[in-house]
Image (cartoon, rainbow over all chains, first blue to last red; front, side):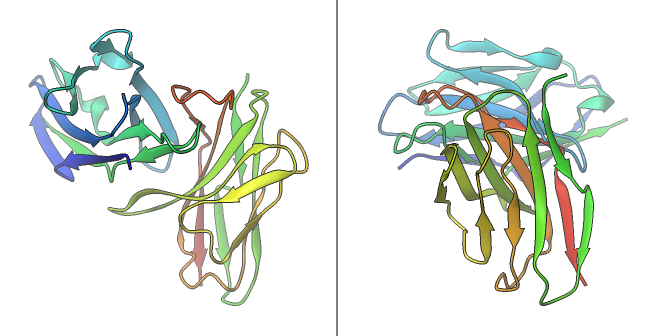
Length: 114
Length: 115
C-alpha cells in the first residue's frame, strides 16, 4: 500500500534562506505525487504535482520538487524563503487501489524567522 | 469563478445533536470527498463519491453520513454517534475520470466545535 512520510512536523528557516521540506513515499507502482500548501484556517492549495513527465517539477510561488526514485523521495525546495511562505505543507501520493483517491502525509509546518 | 464552497465557516453544536455541513462545487467534477483534519494528524478521509447517487466509506466513516443526490452537492452529516466531532472539516473535488494523476481541489473548510 502507498504511504508518505514527512520528516519534521515543524521546520524553521530564516527569511532569505533555503527552504527544504522532506517527503519520502512508499509505492509498489510508479507513484503520482503532490505537494499542497495550507494557510491558517483555509483549505489546501496545490503547489505542484509529479506525473512522470519530468523528475524536476516546478510549482507556484517559486517552489519546486525533485522526484528521486532511487531514494523514494520527493522533497520540496525554494531557494529563498519569504515571510508569506509560512504555512503547513502536505505531501501526498495517489492511491493505486482506487483511482482518484489521495493519501496525505501528516504535514510540516514551516516557520519563517525574520 | 469556479470553485468549491463550504458553509458555514464556523459551527457550534451541543452534544447529542446532529449537524450537517454543506459542500457545493461548480467545477463540473464527478468525484467529491470529505476529510477531517486534526492537529498533527494530517487529513483523514471520511467519505468519497465518484458519481451521483453513489458513495463509499473512507478510513473514518463511523459517526458520519453523506448523500450525493446532485453532482454539485455532497453534504456531510455529523451524527451524535461521532464520539469526538470537534475538528476542521474539508471538502474536495476532482475530475474523477479514473486517472490517478488528477489533483483534488479543496474548499475553505468548516470548523466544528462541540460544546
